[in-house]
Length: 221
Ligand SMILES: C[S@@+](CC[C@H](N)C(=O)[O-])C[C@H]1O[C@@H](n2cnc3c(N)ncnc32)[C@H](O)[C@@H]1O
Image (cartoon, rainbow, N blue to C red; front, side, top):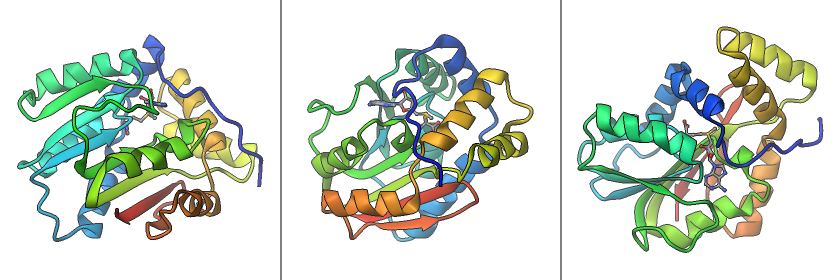
């Protein structure tokens, strides 16, 4: 297994953000919502959801449609990504339900002290210090809150990462292919995520491999 090669945390370059906003994430982002439903089939989701590292807001939008009774606070540190997220909220007319916040984690200041549901897609592999995510979860989750995190898993070799890019991003612009390749080398292995959760005192959350490149962490706080 190749050593982790971290990538920059924030995606604050305009071309990078634009490529991300235009990319086809239909399959993994649909899977995110379906897996949330499968893991929390009884969840009513009528409170306030925290979307951690919301980027351009595609998961935020999908979650808002999947659970029409909830409100969402979506946070990201990158203004360039949030610019596209604002367009998504405008276009989808979600102003009354979705609020966007520019925050770089770790932060003490979110709009609410505690959230009913916490979701996070593809942030963990960006973090230099992964405990930043688990600390955020502990700090802002209500007791019993549903927690659902999905992320990439690290490839075993640069050759495998290049093959994944050819398989899943061949039609995407070069900037997105480069980011995907770097992310596949920056991501954590399931065993590393288990160790992070143990260190955070969150061992009751479950780590599962759900595709050839994704893992999820789910459970209640
Ligand atoms: C790969 S994108 C995922 C965006 C979105 N969740 C999605 O699935 O489309 C990762 C996002 O995490 C943000 N990010 C990375 N490190 C962060 C930090 N320390 N604080 C806040 N946002 C961060 C980046 O700016 C970027 O928008």
